[in-house]
Image (tube, rainbow, N blue to C red; front, side, top):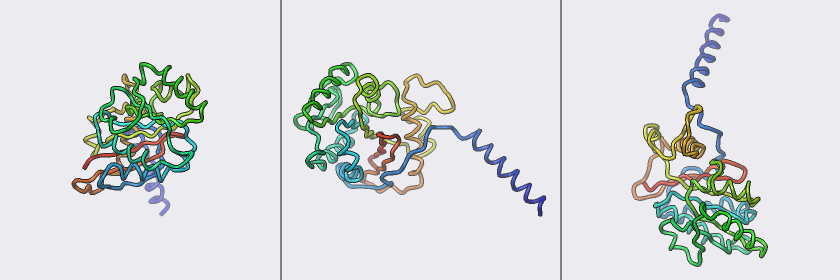
Amino acid sequence: MKYLYWIGAVLVVAVGLYISMHMPDIGPQALPKIEFTQVSLPEEFGKAVFEKLRPEVKLAPVIFLGVTPNKIEQIELWRGFLEANQGQGSKYDVIVVESMLPYVEIFNDVVHIPLKEEISRVADGIKKAREQNLRVAIIGPNIYSSQLIKENVADKLQTEYQIPVTSLTVSEFPLTRDQEKTFEPACAAGGAVDPAGTSGLGCMIRTVARKTYTKKFEARKYSGLMDKTGAKDYLILFNRN
């Protein structure tokens, strides 16, 4: 019996070593906030995000809402989020949008500005708004909003301009391991070269997306889930089925 025990122990160690050597290291783990769900309209999921994060949103005077460019359903998701957030002390008074982002005309009374190219003006505007106790929401590309990416707009607002930011980033997601190979942003796992600097987000998308690979997707619906990926950083995966 002791001989069989040691054989079993050796096998367990061997399997563990094999997994650690052959499975890609794609970054830190995420904390689930909204489990996989399917909705009829993007705005429904946006409202669910707000309800789930209601206390966090109230404590976030500057919020960065990221989207995949050219995906109108993600813009509509944030419309639902902002429409749900109408409470005193929680509603955002100023909405700043990336000037090159399509479909943002669905929002009224917004400030259009190139976020990356004029970040100093963005920061100055945010500081002036905060001096008047106004809350600010920024809508821009997800590679600008995610705190998993260093030296992007969200990172620079915090490190260079000392403006605390809460980031809620939406991305599409792969549906299978095979789709991961060509999905953008790429994941430069295992110390591979990351010329775009977006691997942190790409790897996390894959980590979270793998929870959906066995799910059944209903036709003509939208599927999504949300994980917390940092102290003030959230990742929302959202696909049109």
